[in-house]
Length: 131
Image (cartoon, rainbow, N blue to C red; front, top):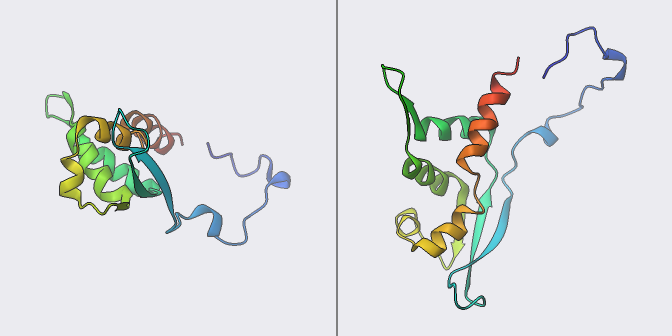
């Protein structure tokens, strides 16, 4: 939470540049298992970091509120968005359509390395409303 302007100013240090607060274009390579019976069979998945705005857009993709105030959650929409926005590449190469057609075991492995829906609901919504 942001502090009032006069409190603690003598301890604060303004950053010199934005390098450390911007999302980088770097990816993180993950190795996921593709066969529950053979741990040697794997696929490589390169994931990019999401920005704050990407996370806000993700929430829009899977949470909707009706005119009557009813909350609807579409997890398929959420994972579709995450696959499209977070997964930069895979080895072997797979496009979004192929990723959406993965079997349950591989899909569970893949979803385990992506941001989780509950993290977005407790993170960006709470963080964005804290001031």
